Length: 335
Ligand SMILES: [Ca+2]
Image 1 (cartoon, rainbow, N blue to C red):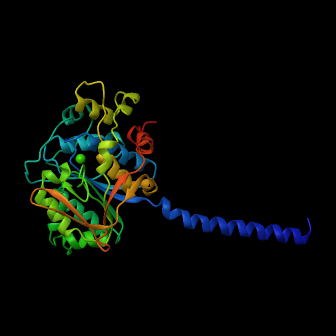
Image 2 (image 1 turned 90 degrees about the horizontal axis):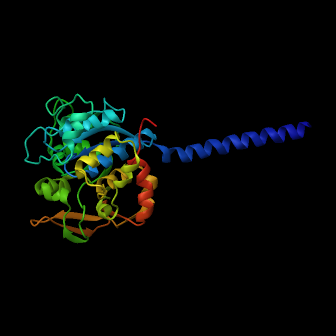
Image 3 (image 1 turned 90 degrees about the vertical axis):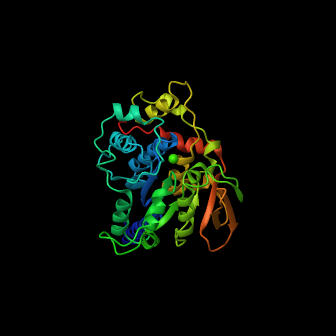
């Protein structure tokens, strides 16, 4: 090989190296893990269990890092069942906080069998207060780094926003949220028709907290209502093809109490998917930004407003969404 050819080859290798480094620098932000807190009313509808499956599947694929789960359901089986699910998916030490005060919101439509049959140690008494846990995580986080996903009533989020300076942080709840959140997937909306219509079930359970959330949630980061299409994306029969002891299959079977079909809407899976897998957002159409309020009849009012940073997302390809969700909902960490 001549000296000229050797130099040319060397230049080519340097060029390839530089291009490769540039591509990695451009691509790596897309692979960056979303740091997720999930706030759930596990024990009411079974889509929360499906959302746990999606969350753990995304975490096992390296797409998200789950920092905590918060429980808004005061039923004594809610914390043990959440701990059983996290343990089954290999995350027994994932922090779980719970609402401590009695709100009257207490549901067990599928939890008892899970608590009976799957290992767990945490209880409502031994789990930390959810607002304290959220404050601790936010206080320790880098600015604009946390994605918060609510898949239940807004009670815990409202309580967080109302929290004041304490031994954890000198910042108020509003200020902690303003600095640390990068994205908020709201639990409201559900079946709501825009721009005006009856609010979804989550907001109906605790309207004062929903109004407080809408009034106080800072607008420094996007707030997206991504669950509204859930009633058009019914899933659950996919669990008939997984191991009989798959814990989320058991959740669906307990919920349906022996019926042969396991189909339920996927409101909560959509919220965690939209948040945790940004590349999936092509399957949604995003509304313009606007202001959202809840009136005395618990109807939602949405008004376009360019500086309000709040939007609705509706699924634009239902079949593609089925295909996107199924491998995540049926994820089995043992395989
Ligand atoms: Ca829910």
